[in-house]
Length: 271
Picture (cartoon, one colour):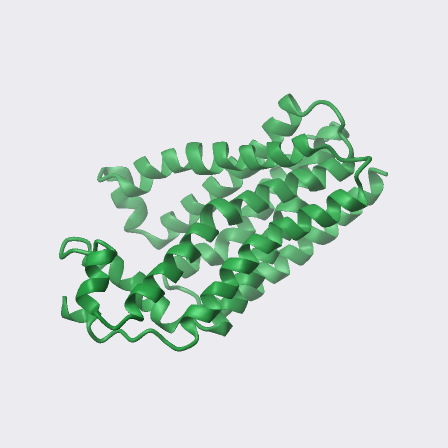
């Protein structure tokens, strides 16, 4: 596996990854502590837990189950979706919008019937966005850090053995190792900003869905689904190498601002 022998871990890779891991933990913790201390009387921890469980059930179990059949498994459906950029993007944004927003709606509508305060809606969003960081992105960053430390020792053979990288898995592992090698403070900042925007996005969309439930306005669920789909359009295009990463960040900032504006307006109305 000669392709690994030319990989050199950058000087800033390990420290920037360490900081990224710390900040990934800090983001949801700070959001929770700030909101809980500010609105202790109006919030219930159950909404935080419900937001976390809702994400895990609808986005990480049910949605991934559909992805296995439509994306991962070898069948005519997956072949069509993976073979067409348009189909891949449409499939990805529809699944994300439908599963996550319908998940919010189902949990808030049928399970969380008590203490329906606007402050609890925000707490639910913190739980949803927070567990996404802790269960999805934090493990990935920790794995990157482990890879960086192992390869920084200088013995490629020992590194491959430690990480259990074989001839069969080399092609899959190589892109991750290459990413680790060039990881720097700019990539750290981009990852942290992306997660901050995602937290604000989840809070905003939760408030919008919650407003529709509390005021019996059915149009707000489709609105949340549509906005979620639009938000995910550029990330899906980036996965297909259609757009640059910096355009994804600009697009995400734009839609976070739009969703935030609508959510703040609905939050104030619910007072």
